[in-house]
Structure formats: C-alpha cells, structure tokens
Image (tube, rainbow, N blue to C red; front, side, top):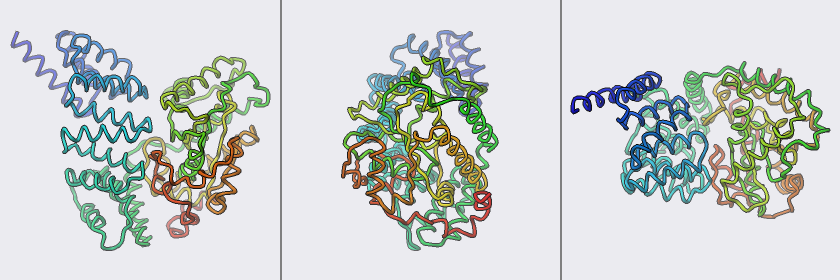
Amino acid sequence: MENLKKEAEIEAQIILNYFQAEDFVSGEIKAKKLIKKFPNYQAVYNLLGLCLQSQKKYSEAIKYYNIAIQNNPNFFIAINNLGLTYHNMGNLKNAQSYYERAIEINSRFTHPISNLANVKKELNNFEEAIKWYKRALSIDNKLYIVHYNLGMAYQALGKFDESKKQFELVLKINPKFTKADRSLSISLKYDIHNPHLKSMENKIKDKSLNNFEKIELYFGLGKAYEDMKDYKKSFENYILGNKIKRDTIKYQINDDIKLFENIKNSFSNIDFRNLENIGNKSNKIIFILGMPRSGTTLVEQIIANHKNVYGAGELKDLTEIIRENFLVDNKIKFPEKFNTKNETFFNNMGTNYLENLDRYNTNKNYITDKAPLNFRWIGLIKLILPNSKIIHCTRDSRDNCLSLFKNIFEGQLNFSYNLEEVGKFHKLYQNLMKFWKQLMPDFIYDISYEKLVKNQESESRKLLDFCNLDWDKNCLTFYKNKRGIVTASFAQARKPIYKNSVKSWQKYESELSPLFKILER
C-alpha cells in the first residue's frame, strides 16, 4: 500500500512539473492516466483541473474539481481553484461563493482571500477589495502581487499616495516586478533628480531581465522623459517597449480587416427602419464607445456624476454574448444574412446582457458601458437593445494613435504596438463608423474630445440632452466622483478638464511620419 502511495506521489510530481513548465496538454494526458490507475487519489483531480483550466477547458475542469470536492468536502485548494475557473469564465457570483467557502475552511489560506478581493474590484467595490487585500497581507506581508493589486485599487480610487507606497513595497520585495515601476511612473511627475528615474535607468541595464520585465521599464522611462520634455529620448523608449511587446503577441491586422468586412457584409442587408418587435426594449444602457484613448473615460465620468446614472466602466459582457452566439473556429463571424424574423434570438441576447448587469446591484435608472471597442457591434446593439443610447467619442487621429502607442493595455488592443498597424486600425474604425452612420443616422451621437475640453458646459448639456437626462450641475465637477477608474486615464479623470493633450502629436512630429503617411491615405 505504501509503495502504491509513493508511486502515485511520484507520478503526481511529474504532472506538477508539466504544469509549471506550461505543458498543460502533457499534464492533462498524464493526469487522466493516473486517475484510471489511482481513482481515489484526490490531489490528481485538482492537478487535472489546473491543466484543463489553463487550456480554457472550463467545463471539464469544473467536472474534475467537483469530483475532488465530493470525495473531500474540505479540500480547500480545489474549492479555491473551482472558484478561479468560474472567475475566468466571468461568473463572479459562483467565483465569490467558492472563494468564501475556501476561506471558511481555512481562514489563513491567502489565495482565496486575494481572489475574493479581485472579484470585489471587478464589481467596482474597491473599498471592500482593499479590505480583503489587507487581510491577505496581514497573514503574509511578502505577497508582492497582493501589494500590487492593493496599489492598483488605491490608484483606481484616486488615492495616489497610498498606491505609491504599495508599489514601492512591491519593488522592495521583488525589484524585478517591473509592472510596479510602470504603475508608479504614471503617478509621478519626473525631473532629472527623481530617484525612481535613476532606479529605472539602472535596472534596464540588467542583463538578466526578461522581455516582459523590460517592456514595463521602457514604457515607464518613456513617460519619465516625456515629463522632462526630452521627447527624443522619450520616443526612443516607447519604440523599444512597443517593439518587444509586439514581438510577444500573435496579431495579424488582416484578421481585423476580415472581421470588419464580415460585419459590413452581414449588417448591410438589414433594414433597420422596420424592426419594431426585435430586441429588449429597455432604455437603461448608455454605451460609450469609439477608439480607445479618445476621451471615453472622461465622457463616462461626466455622465456617471449624474444622480440617475451608474458608471459600470469597461464591460466585457457584450463581447462575451457575441462570442457565445457567433464564434466560428475561435473567431467571431456573423452570418451572411440575419434572420430578423427570429425575434426570440435577439430578445434573449438583450435580456441576457441586462441580467448580467444585475451583479452591480444598483438602483440607478441608467448604466454606462464604456468598452470602446463596442463600436464594432453597433449594428447588433440596435438589434438586441434598440432603445439604448450610443455615444461615439472622436479625437484627432494623430493624438489618438500616439496615445495608444504610449500605453500598455490588458486584452484586445494588439494593434496598438506598431505605428503602421495602429494607423491601419484607425482607418478601419473610421470606415466602419461611416458605415454605421449611413445605416442608422439617428442612433449615434458624436462627441468631439477637442470640443468637449474647449466648451465643457455646452457640450455636457448636449450630451445629457441626447441621453434624455435632466441637467445636473454635478456633471461639471466629474473629477470629484469617487467611483473607481481602472483605465489608462485614471489620473486625468481625477482632474478638472485641461487642454494639454490636444495637439500632443506635435511634440513627436518627426518620429510619427510612418503613422501620418497611413492616416493621410
């Protein structure tokens, strides 16, 4: 019996080695064989769940975690991992429930405590998130990722002194966690004597840094030299950071070209004037969209400071619903011809979207969804939520593309790390917006970033009028809004409107010629 146990443990260690080496397929195969041989060895069910989860085989991962938990209801590690699987699927309710269960079994297990904090953050409940991060750190103060996440939560609330302290603690514990360097750089105003500048300049010379660590430093240095008005040196660092970042991602602009063509082919056949019975008729949602870095955060802050509006931020819900219904070979593909007589299909999508937002538990009459890339789905929004509002943010294309190039993003903005690709994507966006406006001329409200910063009150009044919202003078002091902001504009949205970002491209005019050539075509 002892020999069998030892054999199972040796085999399990091999699976763990596969997992740590990110060879999840080999880990899965080995784990499934081991389960046949040792069906009562619970640890291997958890390992198999991890390998499946890492391949995004979420349903199968859930199955094996549940077997482990049924056999051992106090298996808190598997319970936490089950929560993590639901979290990755976007099911925050289930995720929270399993994290809480794991904490109940083992109150000093920091993983579910930190994971629960992440859920609270995603629900825009930043104060609760901070409480849970602090609880994890009270158990183990060396958890630099938790310090970092706590810093990001403070940053989202505009508590910049607290966030700086956390990022500095991260760098003391792990100097190579350079995400903290870049996050710190966004909150600082640099001059030649700044100690953090010296630290980044020394660190970038470290030959042992990997590419991901270098990327963060180059962007941090780009920001620092820009503060010091050394635009040549600033751009050199942005170029280096973007080049390495671009090399780490698989992206083809042709995939976006094909998607945008598919969208136009699919929706051009629909007569949007004769669709009275299609979609959920709720008027609750205000979509704020356009190119990222075009003023969407500013516009959301203005609207979300209205007494009747809840600002939900950048939501993934619409894209997830589209993926559920239109994913073909792991790519979104709309049908050549929509069956607009299938009213239930569109009504259900609209209702699902609205029901997902119940997680925010708000009593406000309106909710904003500020995912910029939703501009791709305007036609579908019209079919599933025809009474929603569409606010389209526009900005000088040169400033817009430069701002994208100067930032690192989570998620889908893979076009932004190469000047020519960002220019080409911007042209695709302009072309698609022109297409939507021809199909639905009265559905989309354009707001210009430049006009908004020049004439804040008059543009804000027109904006609220379009949303059928009464005038609320609080919208002028949007920067006092205490809601959390997790986009790259978190710092700007905490200040009154300023005009420094208009014509910022002029500082880098000679370096941006490859971009300008594409934008001028």
